[in-house]
Amino acid sequence: MEATENNNQGPDGVDMASGKDARERAEAQAGSGSAGVNETAGAGPESGAAESNAANAPDGPEATGSEQAPAPEETVDPLEQARREIEELKDAWNRERADFVNFRKRTMQEKGQLRTEAVATFSTELISVLDDFDRVLSLQPANDEVKNFLTGVDMIRQSFLSILSRNKIQTASPLNEAFDPTSMEGIATEEREGLERDTVVEVYQAGLYMELDDGERRTLRAARVKVGKAPAGAPAGVEPTEGETSGES
Image 1 (tube, helix red, strand yellow):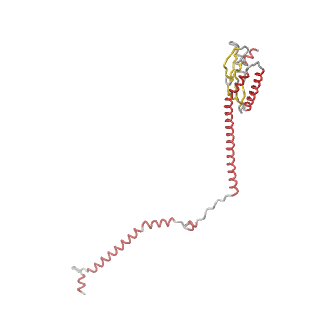
Image 2 (cartoon, helix red, strand yellow):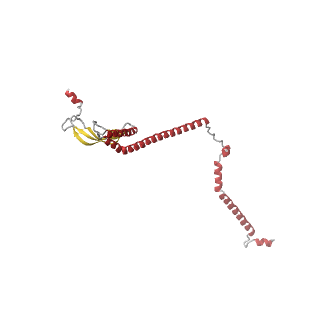
Image 3 (tube, rainbow, N blue to C red):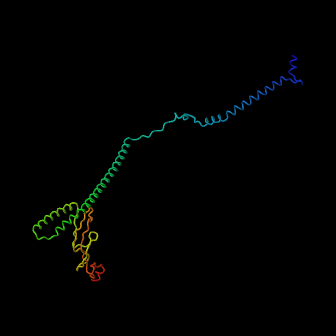
């Protein structure tokens, strides 16, 4: 025993066994302390988030969505909904009807214009036939047989004019009428006494015009006429103004 005890002692008589035990205890304490620090460091962010979520979590029966009260649904009156649908259908029907009426009017107007243009073009091409009739009837034969022939030609001419008249085509022979340059072609002039304005004194070739639906006239061919004019130096025939009339009285 003494030998053993002596082996555990150092050269200075220090107890080696007790020093080893103290060193082991110190290492054990150091190890337990570092483990505690690691556990605290590892739990830092996760524990903080858990604590934050726990703090923000609602309390009571409203904590879960399944326990929330459902929002009340809006009730729609079937009768009121049916009335709105009827009004929408009536409005759409009225718009469609208005569009159809406008389309029909526009179509009829275009159709009338096309017909007018067709009749005017066709009548213009037939004017030469009417001129031939007029040339034949301008003859003054002495033979009775020729006169009877001309009578038949005149009947054909009248039938021809009747067909044109039914299509609103009329001839214009403006003898003794005021000269109108928009519907007449003056190919000769002559001074005549007693005229106060330019007047047609002779018709060389009758004109042709169409009566439109609005009451206006559309000239298809201008009448060729001789225009009578007042002699040079003669009064123009202008009506006096109101002041001149009162001065003369």
